[in-house]
Length: 357
Image (tube, rainbow, N blue to C red):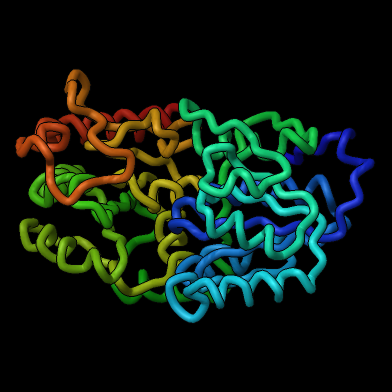
């Protein structure tokens, strides 16, 4: 669905830069804004800046004209390199910068680049460097929150705008070959499980994942695990608890290739982490498990048929806005009280509701 406002016709932007150098999930969730900008300014060059880890996620998107990689923890670290990068950007003569990332560094970078109009959130550490500081409001989805950065441009958004990941021909061929070699029936009932997270308190317990796997296997479903290399040990522990064959794609593939695995599945079940947004990006129904965090933070799955699994009635939730290494109250009820039966029941209803529709 194209979202084009007549009020943008008078604008004469030759180059626009969008800056998002946070986590991969944040990068996925800014793609609807980039897409809408490209639709509203078809003659404008759309540039996007992100970190090396996110290159694979966005480099195939057709509405990005140029991708800038800012290695803020590597070759571009430090004030001197920040100033150098800003000077490089200044040569591009951007007309507009949009900065959803709420860091001082991102705001300072577009300021150093001499970009005359700079739009960001008022809760950014560098809000004083913006020409337009947009109010940051919490109780909406992150995609909708990001779209508020377009209010100063009079761009009106209608309908539900989902994120994008575009696996290319090579990505799809690699996954097809892997599935054939594994003996996976691609026409069968496939469910994708993503048990990883960088934060321990956002991970549903390994034995719960194993029990959930057993429930799907008892219904003759094929279970595929995805995750990064850092999730490999966790997923191996889960698989070792299962008594029937499952498939492990963790640590084997890129973000786009993992997204293509999700695309081929009838359902994705994930912790509150990046795979949730990957599922939305390839239009696979998503069930997201929330523990120490809550959907109200704005990172719940955004598809119309998506669901969340969480424990209600705990006064200690949420205990953090990102995650923790340990439960501060040492009981971890937000995850332990969310049983495999509860999660499976929600998943099974999702599957049958979609089948009926």
